[in-house]
Image 1 (cartoon, rainbow, N blue to C red):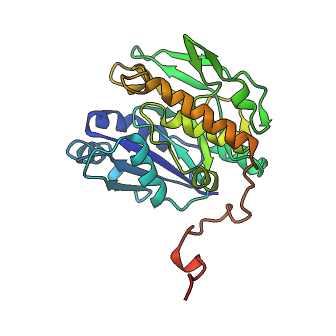
Image 2 (cartoon, rainbow, N blue to C red):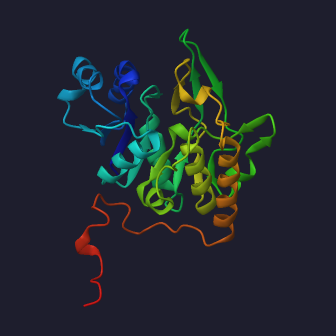
Amino acid sequence: MRVEVVTAVHDAYAHFLSAAWQSLQAQTFDDWCWLVQIDGPATAVIPELIACGASEDPRVRVAVNGTREGPATTRNIALGRSRAPLIQNLDADDELEPDALQNLAHALDTHPQAGFAVGPARDLLYSGELVDFPLPFRPGLQARGRLIAAVAREPDRYRLPVHPAGIMWRRDLLLTVGGWAGLRGMEDTALLMAAAALAPCVTLDTVTLRYRRHRAQTSTQTSFFEGGGGEQISLIHQRTSRLLAGPGWVADATTGSDRPDGELSDLPAGPG
């Protein structure tokens, strides 16, 4: 199945794109395309894509917001452009391991009831050193809600059991949960929690993501901003509880095809 890789990027992160692009070129899985969505003006991003050669590859499809809308909105715009049954997130400052797309897509093909697949992430330090963080699960299918039960919720330590930046999603599940949440610094956390409340997932024991550590990244800044940071976590857990109490997501039998979803011609006619 084809995989579309979604990357939201703004000018300040443009210089990271060449490394992200090199990690895509190194993939052992070749049925992919890269949906680059530029958040704000394209002043620095387009020249960087030209300089690294990505702009010459027909698998690279670039679109521009024009205005700064933030990562959640920007990823969701790219999601609206997508048509493939599988969506891989790749932040502009991160890199995929060479077998990442192959291993994640194979896991979802093997487990059609799973809504997403995720492997361990390595921290990529400024020095170039890689620091491993194994997952707290045996590899294989994880039941709906199991990832949520493994979240660390101590007052001074809120940590997810998997890295939300490196997940491969079934597009159908992404559409069901509404894409990335409109939260500050926790848009991928909220998405993961909602998805894990609705669907089983597959965890791998092979590393799939290199998560770059640097001072400019927003994840190094607290989400407890003045005026509502703590309430974000409360909102996430309230929503998660309600989703867990309701019916789960069921895989769409058509998600294995690259057919467009939601075309107006597919919708029932209205009254009159």
